[in-house]
Length: 303
Image 1 (cartoon, rainbow, N blue to C red):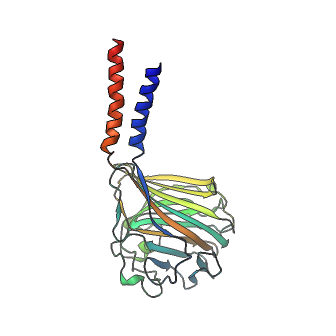
Image 2: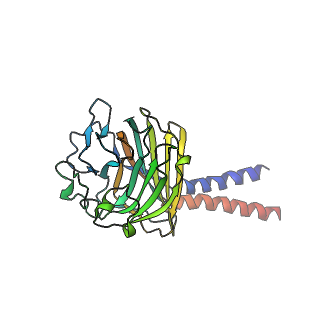
């Protein structure tokens, strides 16, 4: 009995040592408290209306405030290039994750639109289109050639906006510039949808966390989004891209689509996290090998 327990511990240590080699790294974070200006990379704004604006901490602790003053069907998004060279998912199980903490001072609780989120590879990283006012544009421009994944997630159960995930295939047109466009031929491929009746009802003035994850599944990519309030998960969606085409990422976006009215969003902080699975260290194999050797010796002695 004692030998059995000892062997089990040795084998468990080896297996745990191998599994623990998966490394998770935060490669980008911004809490919007130390920025003096948003007029330079990595941040820039995209919208489809002159009624859209953005400001850094209009009041202390407000974060990056996205505001739309009038109109319906209006989009206001902030993009950021979080790496000078794309992060590559090079094997099954590796992932990249965008974590956004946000709230809505007004509009979200009753609107029929949705949150917008994406992770892309932007081939024109740090181009001049980002300078000056932040690169505000609705046609062509900075993100027109970006490839990757994005989604729109309904705020509530009100009919009008189901949750949809898309692959963004790159095309220098208006329809590929703003994330919420959903029926754009070859520029955008819809991966799946979920009915609005399954959405949680998000309230104004409450802090939420959106966790958006792209995972390399080997021959396909998995896209997952979770909306939570503290430790409580309110919404979760998972869809797949069977083609698995997009595994390089250097750009994020987050914002809101006010379908029936104006939706204002405060982005409190954003982080990008990656996880890779490196080859286990030689010592790890040695530990597992020792356990297997002991197991073999025990069996030999029993004979």
